[in-house]
Length: 334
Length: 270
Image 1 (cartoon, rainbow over the protein chains, first blue to last red):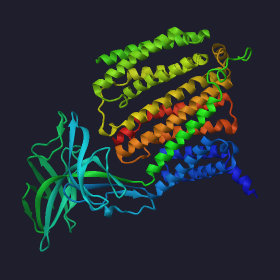
Image 2 (cartoon, one colour; image 1 turned 45 degrees about the vertical axis):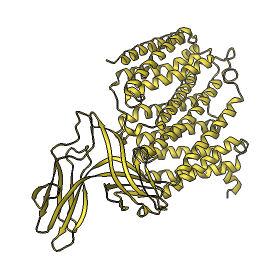
Image 3 (cartoon, each protein chain N blue to C red; image 1 turned 90 degrees about the horizontal axis):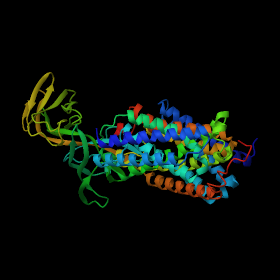
Image 4 (spheres, rainbow over the protein chains, first blue to last red; image 1 turned 135 degrees about the vertical axis):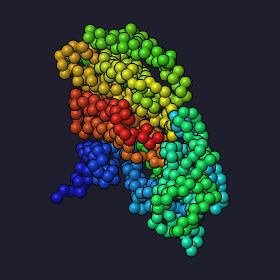
């Protein structure tokens, strides 16, 4: 049986560091090839490196004798532990929000760590529209997105966010994205039922020249294909333009093999119910990100770099770069 | 053709002349002298003017397409190697080992499409400039390490020993390469941090496992591994030199290969 002291010393050895780094490199290559999910591949070698770092700091006199090197390794250990916290608590998702309709916590696709407690239902904000200028060739400019929200004190606020400045609520960061477009606001009244108002998000514009969407009528399994026919489409690859609603348009609906073009305010009476096209508006696609460890990760990373720089500066200052290190070759040693 | 392209072609020609002088002097076993320094300095100033004109015309830095990436990296590599060989005159002949890499990049740059680029809104942040700047210093220090430790490898051969006999002994070159590598690790780490901060607000995440991120991390791991290998196994200067070459290859492919051969590099998420 290996004595605990010897085991601890072995775990903290430089050879273990080399083994851990090589293992991590191999795991990373497997991730790069898409053979394995990152967390599953990287967790074991990173676990070994965490143990190695802790053992090295406890047992290696060379490390303990140098304050900057010890601080660097402590920061690195803290960083790796924070990475673990980050993976356990993070949240990533996407949402589409119609102009004028409050965000209700619904997300389209998301992933999160096992310790994440979803608080999106506490978030209160509403999309107020956006402005985007496009250069020649449909090259997108900055998104200027307007939102109204309720802050942590319950007060109503209004302001703008853009590509680099998200809306931060309950720790969630909401980023507006290039995925946005037109939304048709419709009222569906089933036979003998109560009217339901909702919006249908047409495919992203101007990446789709003819925005369309397949959906089903509320409370039924009747498919409805919807596309937007614009008399004056705002997007033009040949000249700069700004995103705007088309002045003249029709909503072309195909339900049950029958097609009808509706203008705002027009109604389509069907056997199943009554569909009224209210108006055309916009929707914005948001990326949602939550990671409570992130600020600490940045602090730990900068601190680690600072300590490593300090260590190298001290070490390299002991021997002159131009004289000792690059001393000429003694005669006969060529 | 824009005036800046003519200037770039002229700078490339002068760089080529400087390379020729460096090789002739290496062949004679003498360090590069004032002629090589004047040609490198002159070429670099014309190159600077070309980059400055392009930057002013397009209103953004040169880092969006392969041509801009190669041009700006040639510029920073020449600057960093120039400073190193100016400050360390005893290792100046090592320029003959680093120069072919820069000359290949210049030839590649002249063949890359120089068309105008558009700065996406997600690129309009100071963090990008820090990210790119740190990356250039990292690349420069790695190439410096390759140049210095490459002499150790070249001296395996009799002709190499003759050409580079005036340089310090292998252990001294190895130590210098190690120092360059240590600096490279610092700047590679800073590049990763600045890139993560930029990515957080540009794309709503600080890490996404895109190929460029994965291979940058791989290069960082190789650097960390090499710096640990030296004290752990007391590796010889030639073995150390081969590890340095591996790091440079990984960094080179990450910088100039991944963004243009993968369908999901940074530009895929603009």
